[in-house]
Length: 194
Image 1 (cartoon, rainbow, N blue to C red):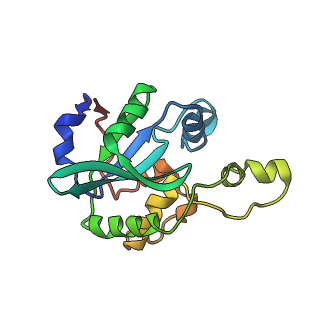
Image 2 (image 1 turned 135 degrees about the vertical axis):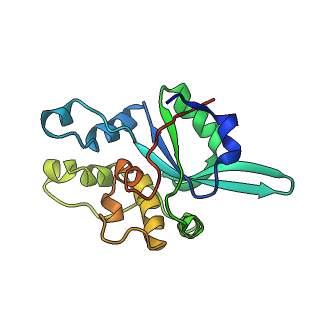
């Protein structure tokens, strides 16, 4: 399917939609390589299609509306305009997808995410990320204390607080791709372009 222009899509996006990103920066490529689900030898030469997830949130102020993204990044959970995030990803060669929810609990999911946003959480340190990916224990022979929240953990924890993640993987161990393909959101089909 052809990509859809952001201006054509903007008015259709609702609070709580999942936005999935395929970053082209080295960190994003590392996440995409580590979380790919190809069997056998192909896992060493392929990339997962998703490296980051976030929620769409409309912010209204007086007569102006701004479509924002609620996500967890280096400084922890934050809210930024979707248009600026699109420019960053697309100008670096990345891709952005929108995913409509297949459930009717978007308001509960978003409430949980907004509640976590105000808790002073931060993104994990490099040591903790290395631990999550299994490298730290291999290199140092010890565990690392949990010290932050990744993008997929942030979004998955919000989904879990809304009662939609029962009998699934622990949010801290869930990859962006696993949330994107969980069945709670339509599969990403059309990318967004500016």
